[in-house]
Image 1 (tube, rainbow, N blue to C red):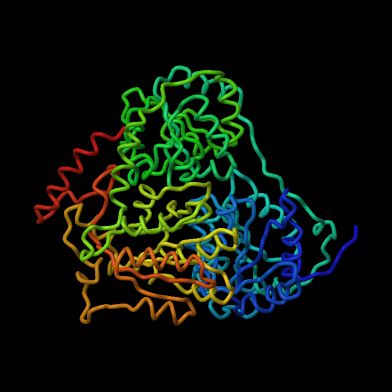
Image 2: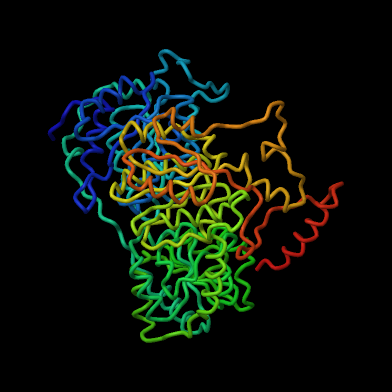
Length: 607
């Protein structure tokens, strides 16, 4: 057996450089890195040696670097991924939130987190957490519950088994998610005679499992017996590359389609069978057909509570659920009839077995009525003296968006209203992180999207609260010459949660700046802040000015930030659905008691 002597860090980088997709490109498109004493000597040296083969990108925060990597993988439908490396201690822990985001959303990211000395020579090393009762415990154990695969590398030869296991998980459509390799810092520098075969080029093909014969037969029986089915399109439609298959299936059998946050843009908004967003943040048209469906066909969705209206939306008394999903865990939720398969293959098999069976299809008047309301909500305001609403901001972004534009967001008010109102034309023209709804994902995510698809315009929509949580990758985008447009809607606090607080009977408290315990008023100059990081920044005072600014940003060559003040209280008065947020049983406030009564009444509708 031929061998080559490499350090563990060198072996890791060399191995990753030789893992390819069936499109002929490296699966790991690059590595984000912030160096510290835990990885600068080991991985830092290894990455420098292969800098022309494996690009290394420097970010400003470990969490936001991981967000960029995750957004990159999502935008490319999990066909490629990135790695992220940090030093030990706080640098590593900064990535735990991002790992959870990737885990919930089933997205691949490789986290190369540094760890303590395996030989325990300098124990305790700088930034090491000591567990008084467990000498093997380090902070990296926090990654275990938020990783699909976790491995602590305490000897260099352990990479021979760990690296292929890591790649299997990153490329497995059912198990896909974050992989954490916890690399002891002394081991990174240790050499070993690795077999040369470990570094041979390997191509990872996208597996497409076919459905079990019995499950397929049961699914066909359900469909043939149904009178009024509806398809719930989830993120798995995109990951499977099944958007055209979904379209063909819906058209052939005349079945209405509703979309989750992750599934939005699976069908063009103006397709006759696309009735829009479903659930808590859904359109009136989608929720109307979902409520009447006797068969709910989930395709690549994990049936999050926002999709199901906390399991009160699908109200037909004889309703059944058919869950087509590549992950058995998701296919059996809520007593669903499982159809475990790749989304594209599963739809093809179902369609062939159904033959020419067609349903009546949903009432087009319901969809027409919704979009008439939506267009009115997003139109420029007649009263130009009033603060703009978020819906009107979305209208401006809609007018500025071209067919190839990607509009993205993550948390706060905008996700719900974008889900309802934005008219996504092409697949992946809508990028929402709502599985974990992570504040701070937006700007870093926009950077990752643009790196994934450089030819597409990227408009990042972020509230002032999320911007304050994590904005530093704005500097990275400027430094890397990556153009994105960022629209900051400033409602002076956490407007979304403030409204929820009020809806559950609570007093306005600690969400908007005006109702927080501050001695001095907070007035943040977002324009100056963004400009200090090199962005071209401006503030607009009206929707008309926002229209002009977005048009100018389209032709800009650098990062553009546009700030606009918005009304923290206004939301759409149409669409949406109940969401289970527990209200206190006992309170001195009559508003809370009233909200509790409404809550208890709503609970009776859960199916």
